[in-house]
Image 1 (cartoon, rainbow, N blue to C red):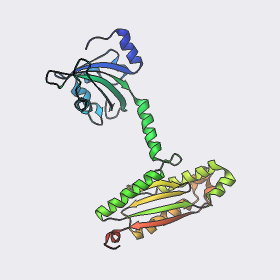
Image 2: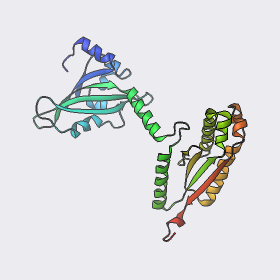
Image 3: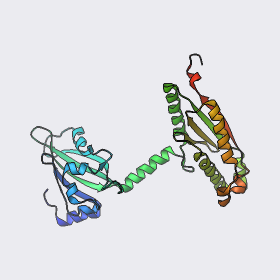
Image 4: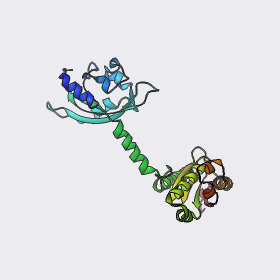
Length: 280
């Protein structure tokens, strides 16, 4: 690629950015200086071709090539703009570097992409922020379990799956009794700690595929896959016994004398094969 002024390359590098030019026919990629500021653990030769670069990209190595095909060509000398995001990993044990790539591609005589110019920049903070926002939109901030909206959506999916495959599932609503008394006696922080501890105790008793969510302030919803009516009753006893016990971890946290007096109750609902019979 045409050499950038040394100070320009340094400025880009200080911003976690690098410029490139990609010749599609030869698959060669030329980079600005200080490329290691963006890809510190990746040898420059590994980034010298489109194919080599694609081998480092996650989750889909073809994303750069596909982006050119999705953007309709703009005739003239200004090129066709595009923008993509992807992860780059130097090795299977290395952390993913999240990259935002913006640029323009220029068509050849046949109207297809022939040359690409652009800039890549490190995007880890924005990616982490987006993932955190996504997590907050799906999960209860206190317990880390699904919030009510996504719990209900998961329940609808479980019911549909049960109907489709003629299997079984159950929904359990677990409520903490007298939580308001904890608020009044010890404050909201202690009540929140009780809620979190009970969520943790339920979580460790779940099987793979089961779902836990916070239904409301003092209630949790539990979706049990492949669970019959008899299984549901056994599971309810197991969950309630786990919550009610007064053991070492609660005592060490200072919650033992408060959590030990809390009672939980469970409301149960099961959907089995008989629910699929006509008229059932």
